[in-house]
Image (cartoon, rainbow, N blue to C red):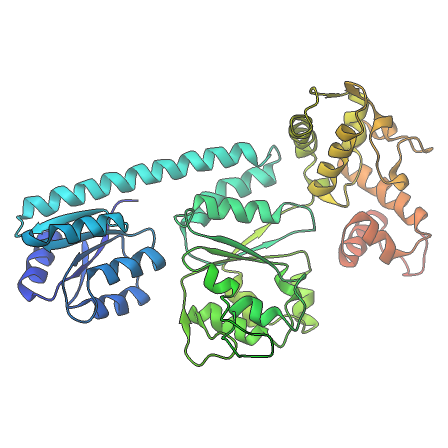
Length: 454
């Protein structure tokens, strides 16, 4: 993206006016600050593509402005202005991440030349982003229309700073998508910090998020930075966000809204600049209705929603994923590449994959590790016995049926196995009770709740 918005920082009004007039003639949007402190106040509220700052100023110098920009707006470039006799300061600034420097006095042509170089740098960075995008198109297996649509959206989602909420069943690849968004973003060189909200005890979750001061509680012998502080300038993945205790959600909401928080035991807030990505395998509307998750927190996190469909609903991805995992685990385990027989492929295609992509990966890895023959046949693939292809309803008999007909047969088979227990049937199939009720109504019409469908 070309440079559009520029912040000029200099304590000399004549320099600010000169730069403002010069750059406005080239249709840039310009803001100016008379010292480093004022510049940082502006940067806390607005994003810029380029910052042109003097080195020596009262109330925070150019290096302090540079440091703030690198930590909080890493996508912005910084040009340092300095006097001829202080060129060593400009060299120091370049080592700290400044894009270029200008020696005072300089002409309009000088500044325009440097900005042209900055625009070229931005263009090259954008090309690198596109190359990373192509790389992720290859890494994330997507042959189904639903997954192709998601991958097409990822570069645009990554460009923004908006919070992302990724929903989907366990094992669908939510963390992989989150990592891709970070890697495609301008924060890619900054930290990507993951917090498994379901794995942290309720008594520790606040200090894990926000850190604590020395002496805040018994055992707090030193100050500790929390995940929010470690993720500053980068991306924070709140994995299984709906498992956060309700009591902590108001503080989390404030920290996300204000981009600041207090460590446990502290009185002064800590400012951060973080991109938030959240994931959940719950029915979020149900969680809100049951008052275990705040609606206002959900809307703050759900600016850019992404829904990952379960593997059984994108069957076009099953065999390409299986081949990908087969190559990966053969290489990892130093074994010759194996192949799936046609019958083995059929078995994979007509299994409902309650554990989604994670289950497929585990099954392929197990098959490779047990070192079966070069050609993998159905008997080499361990699947849930309730869906065994050797039962009376052989999976080969499903060939030629529509996906709706296959799904209907699978629901009937699972209901039979679970003795018509709908809750267990939904759990086995990896769907919600609501989804199961809707499918029963779709396939069997209106029936009494106690009726058997088997």
